[in-house]
Length: 113
Length: 112
Image (cartoon, rainbow over all chains, first blue to last red; front, side):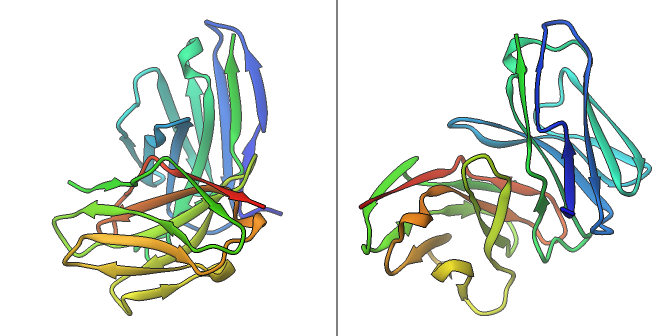
């Protein structure tokens, strides 16, 4: 099994719908992150969590919300999806030192029509 | 604040030629530096990292990078490109213990 699992892998949804992307990890890491990837823009941080009771906005949090249900689970929600939220979404984890870098999931490709 | 600049969004090399992907960073403290590779339809995989030990860092698949503080650079190299190296490469910088800042990526094409 993968260390960081994202579900679903692909999703097509309609404008205005609420959608949740889920992430679970078996690394035992305290820190979890959500990024979106767009061509030419690299990875941009949406939200991050340093432990279960800690939630922080990243550089592009508008239109998104998150929930840290447990140390191993961190979900991302789009409350009312819009077409410019079409992107590849990645969940990542790290320990508190970041000495070993981030471990990434395989990504969720989201299309909003 | 930290930032990363990757020069060249697309790089093409012939199979067997030297691969050089450039990364410059800004950081107010000694940073951690990372290179990640993303193959098509996959997540990001760690290639190598610099965390204040040896300045020449060796990674997987024959890649290496050298931390040059005076030039604020962390360029990625590989002596001989292979077709399987075709991928997107991301440089990232982190203050120790804090979040990453990623570059915008460099797409590497290897020409047979």
